[in-house]
Amino acid sequence: MNLNNIVIVLDHPDESRNIGAACRAMANNDISELRIVGNKADYDIEHIHVLAIHAGDIFDKANFYNSITEATADCAICAGTTRRRGKKRGKLLLPEEFSDMAEGITQNAKVAVIFGNERTGLTDDQLDECNLGVTIPSSDNFGSLNLSHAVQIISYHLFRKSLLQKKGEYHGYTPLTLERIDRTVQTITDNMQKIGFFKMPGREDMENFWRSILSRASLSEGEAQYLEKTFSKMAGLASKNSEH
Image (cartoon, rainbow, N blue to C red; front, side, top):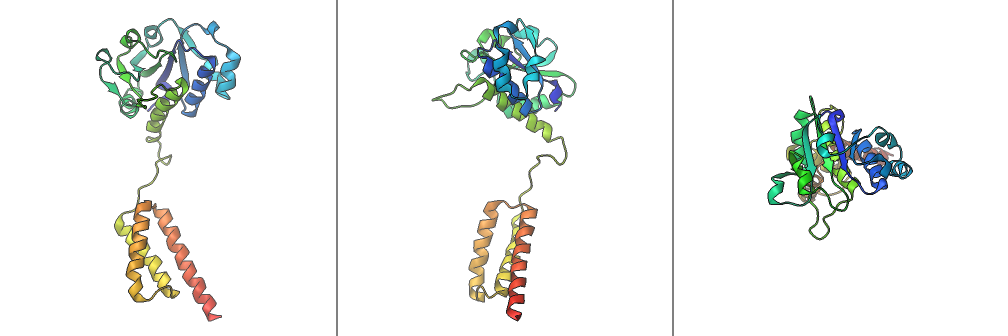
């Protein structure tokens, strides 16, 4: 995922502060190209910078256009965001599906994501200027998202996709197998037995207890090793103290 080829387009946003908050959301996710369909003179630059915090330069470098078609002329994909489904809106991708699709395209071409006006969203005519739709699932009782929140959600999914290509960054971990957890359980109960915590008949119940707890905890290898060292040290200290 080449985030330099991601373009965020705001179509006639109403509120200057929402533009600033959208800039901050973009900066959080290493996306820097903003385009706005509308007139720059309609917005309060001071209000934009207050909400943008240290991302005001994204607005300062933004370009303004007369239509979505004009704003996305150099893009290979123009994705309109909408929460409303309808016959004219076609199949809508979820954010994660969109990021999967955009991953290959952004290596060589620009991908634009269009966000509509805060009050009306994108109309059918505006969506007709896009070549696909993206939807963010939300509550039926209160489905409308703040503009900057919508920008944050889409940008985050694109950002996460980019991290998968960077070794050693935000990859999480692989939870241990049950076989590996059993080795940790054996280490724990061996050391508990050394300090006289239980008689042999009670060991099986203790093993079952630890196996249940640790399997639900989805331990990493490092966490398992830390537990093993802790119980081994406890048994060693207990033995040393008993000698004195």
